[in-house]
Image 1 (tube, rainbow, N blue to C red):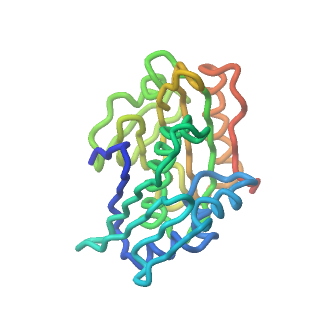
Image 2: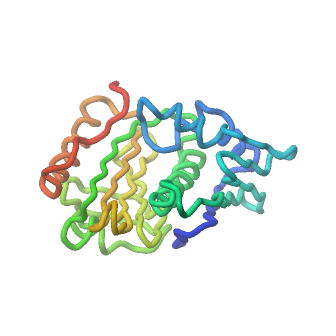
Length: 250
């Protein structure tokens, strides 16, 4: 199903509310789905999920960090998780990044869903790329991902990175595409998220591109092959960009 990019954000997870709550309240578990591996990840988690945090007694609502409200609604086959972001002062510096923050939480909720449904007990490996530019035709077209089926459907694609990947379309929004990738995990599959970031007149007039790759259980050689392929795509389309951000060494 195509998801909305707007506030509030919501995602349906095939896990019970208790499992979702634990994933929202245990820092070591949040680190397996929120964002990507960085030295500052622990501080970011503390800021977003534990600053001025208030928990409901029934463990179905969390309010933190300026009013961001996570609501868990048990449904017949899982849990609907809804995030309503707190108000942003239009005169503050944060207002410039409001759209980016919404896009970030869109990815994070899908990563929460993926972690719970596919790899609840497996440490992740992340590879991240971001640049304030968009390749001609957009990131999806440049990768060969511009003609895929609807969410939930099987796909196979020959990437311009040189890889052939397959799996299911995990989610799609106005700006993001998420794909499960069978070759990105030793057991099960990994997750690829590609985003065309929205334009911002002052900060990013041409828009931007983000790629977030989550892999599981891969050895150093296989992980290196994946990162090398993506780095070749990066240097071809974004020669002035910074190197890929990768997780801890194996």
